[in-house]
Image (cartoon, rainbow, N blue to C red; front, side, top):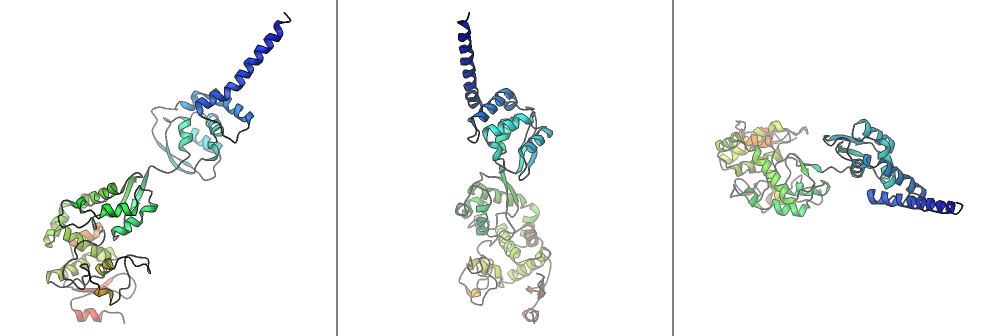
Length: 365
């Protein structure tokens, strides 16, 4: 009997050692390796806790639960985050969530931000989701009056999967406007708007989205209005792109459109500053695509876009006109004016004239 006692002790000891060393390995197989920052005692402690929690970590609270927004504030303690998750009905057990975070080391890398989470996600899934607050979609804005190079310049900070070079290559391809044989690029048809797009959106897909949005806004009323002004859609968009750059105040767009239409109707040069700015291109000194003010030399630049030299419309649009400018061309004001210039009060409004003499008299004193 005395011989059996040492043997029993040895067996118990062997079993204890086996269990002691098997706990961390079992936890590692199920939940991955423990954080390097844990001591050996902590590894065993949290391995044991994870095995105890077991299904709480891998089974969702509600497999049919819907998505909901959940915000993590900057510097918010892990315990508060866990408590909020439980109160929102996203996880079942606060302790299981915290123990998993500490075991994996993910407790130190939770990112502040707003997430879309669901009780249909497991604690493991939610813990890993909280490591990156970057949304799957981004908001991409195209402003009225931008030329394609300005759209391209906004891409590096947009979060979209497109470089400026890739975008410009696609935007300069007139095949995206197959219905308009006179198109030389997509300039003017990259509709200004706020877009919610997947981060994976590439250059081709972006150009397709912008031009498709233009088509959606090209209503029958607009096209009929263009026809009444004896303009094709392409010509109308070209004129609207000039009106967009000239009309600082939206309410003036119909009057400015009327001035240019009056000039076109009598074969008078448009003398539009934005067309010269477009021809000049990027100004590295002013760091802009729209040189201002223009010099007398600028007005003589040799370019088909220079409407101070050439009669009629430029070969293509010079910017992306918004709906207000498109409507102004389709439904212009009825005026006798052939001239306009900015008021001297800095308001952005204009004063109009029928004759050149009146136009000169309207100059700032």
